[in-house]
Length: 391
Ligand SMILES: [Ca+2]
Ligand SMILES: [Ca+2]
Image (cartoon, rainbow, N blue to C red; front, side, top):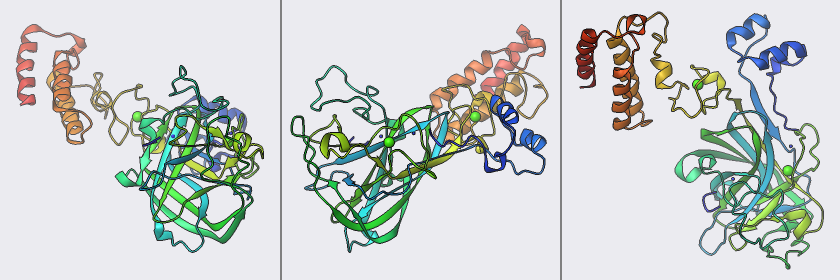
């Protein structure tokens, strides 16, 4: 919160793959698709990694709700709406549409922060008594730490475009966010502002396993407030309909960690979505590197990888050099591990101590010995080579 967190139109196919027979697609999805396989299977069609896209569609003019970080004299207020990820993805870009005050310049946008939440009771204290009617289908108490991106720390960059100089909505929620039994305010009335589309790029991308999540953007303005616009619910084409599409929720720091249903608890108008989209790519081995950039498919879960999606084990496999063939000897294997480990240290992926441990384990392994057997005299000799490598 202080940091902060639909049938999904996940396109598991590239545009070039649309229209391909389902049996072929089943084969493709059952196996990791490489550019080579695609080229063979789909002669003449351009191959690319699988894209992920999601959208709730364009604003419907029903409501605009506050979503802003804390600033002097202003309490943090958060609006969130949900989406589904059907398989492990890395999300590199998002858009969302809201209102800027009439007359405000785009340069008044001072910052953007994105958080992703699991659905309650994920990341939530279920032992406390909520100050709202229900938390069923709300965002969790706290965001997914690893998924937060903020322009203030450079993990996100954004651009903004005025889509419409004057856009009106029939209702709004800004300050009237109250604990039960005072939650029903019917909203704070119609608002007119400049419709602004904000596009954000995540650096690094946000890696998410298959699950149901909430998206929560916040916008800091130098004066006035950013109000996030609602979108049709149910979602209509070209948006990405999904089930169950949950409604938008809102809270401020006085209500947190609880959330209120905007349309059900506060305004009584019925459920709303919020206008946003996500795009990215599949990440079959879940190492946080998109498939099209991953030079090492099949990385085991939880292993540290470099920007190319390669672990130290994949760069220097026990079975032989990554480029093919076999190790000339144990020393060559250990030297290769040491080189990879030192490169990981240089990239701040592991500590020097961790690198030393990895190299020591490589030295004690049987990798690189003919037939996997270590001869004691040869071992002692190579062991001293290894120590030389480490120094
Ligand atoms: Ca929704
Ligand atoms: Ca990988």
